[in-house]
Image 1 (cartoon, helix red, strand yellow):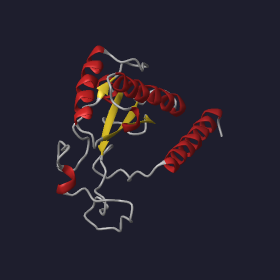
Image 2 (cartoon, rainbow, N blue to C red):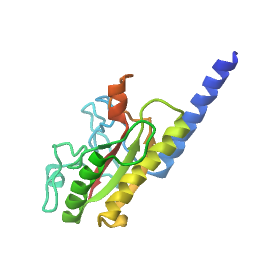
Image 3 (cartoon, rainbow, N blue to C red):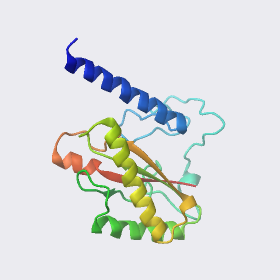
Amino acid sequence: MTRARLSYSLLLVVAASLLLLEGCGHKRPPASATGPGSYPRAGSTGSGEPVDAGPDVRSIDNDLTSGEDFTFSDASGEGGPLADVYFEYDQSSLTDAARGTLAQHATWIKGHGGAKITVEGHCDERGTVEYNLALGDQRAQAARDYLVSLGVPRERLNAISLGKERPVDPGHTESAWAKNRRAHFRVSR
């Protein structure tokens, strides 16, 4: 085996190990065949077959996607009402546009007391798995900390890194990379 193939094989083993460890910390439904960031509804495999979701998983029904305290932007509950904020290449500092978006998010979150937010830090495909997990964490924390500075209670916010593992655009162009350098917000009750 050449040194390059050995290095590549070792990188794959490390990446697989990190993904397994990341999955041990919290439950997350598997990605559906419809693309990255899309998840099947609880009680579904994404292919229309019902499955036993277990006692700790609730289906996203119409009565859960609209309620007295907030509504999701679409019937699936994906994404929720908070837009992504974007980062420059190899940066975790907030741009002026990101600060403006986060100020709107802070107003919405403070007005919807039942909402809990998970801030996901994402990166483009360039760089190692380890580097991008660290950078994604810095991006998620930067967004979370800015929301806290605007008066959002820290206990309602959770920051996690997904590194480069869940691109919103799988392309290999600057345009695709710019879409993937983001903080994404998942809203739950």
